[in-house]
Length: 295
Image (tube, rainbow, N blue to C red; front, side):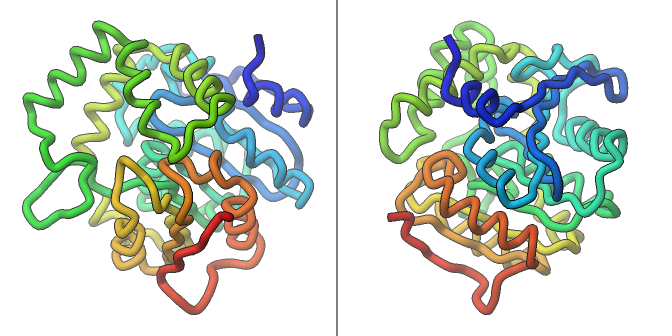
């Protein structure tokens, strides 16, 4: 049975292209034509999770959403999956498709991948949007934007064991924290994507994520950017967006007050409007941080 995500891609004549990039066999979901939006999914998810952004096709955009190795319909990673290797794969995708003026969109872990790519190679990029993510997931004295202040080496190891021993059970707990309000159709579609992920691959990517620190890299990113966060996110404080905007030279933070960890899924019209404005016209003015209701 098709999920809401798959149905949306089918309705928009989406194509699903098998590609090999740097030795990695991946699936790339594409729809529309025009300005390229390269969308990088979050941990345990897949490219189909950007289904609500398909509405932007009507504004002259092409949606390009790869399944990272070991997630969605892509094969298990041949190289050890890290934020750096995933960023390199997306860079290869952009080069292979000969894309230019790309707006990168990264959700959660995908934001870390986007930051890594933009900090190390921005030649083909026009703009960047991060979705509800912290530049440093692990706690540190004086750092108020970690995923959990109680995270330790021991709890990380326990989480990895839980992922590998009971992937479905672990994902159920994780997915319960994504949405601000229960939405069965979205929850079911996310669970179907999570079921496709390889637990070992996912746990390796998770280990890289908790070791990753993008704070120094943000200062090196020279493209206009938005940090869009959910005012009711259960994963990160909404104020992390303002911190990202402080660290990144051309970044503006936007808080959508009534949503959780997935603003692009929970408030697609508001999210798409901000994404479209950035991709077409550049960053907003005049404030560094806006709090906006999605109602």
